[in-house]
Image (cartoon, rainbow, N blue to C red; front, side, top):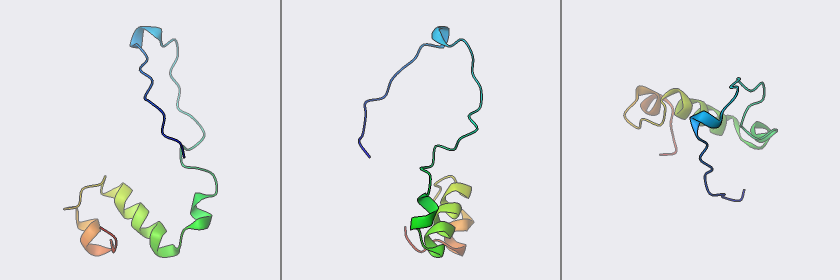
Length: 63
């Protein structure tokens, strides 16, 4: 995926803000991952990237 420069939008320029019904995760991504990679991804999300979180010691295999 190409990296784009961030776009900054002023709060004053926002008329409405609603939750998206679509995930920002690319469609079909989990179809390409192994079961272990999916569990590692879930552990990372649950631990919010905190390497000291117990989820890493319980499951993470890829630091």
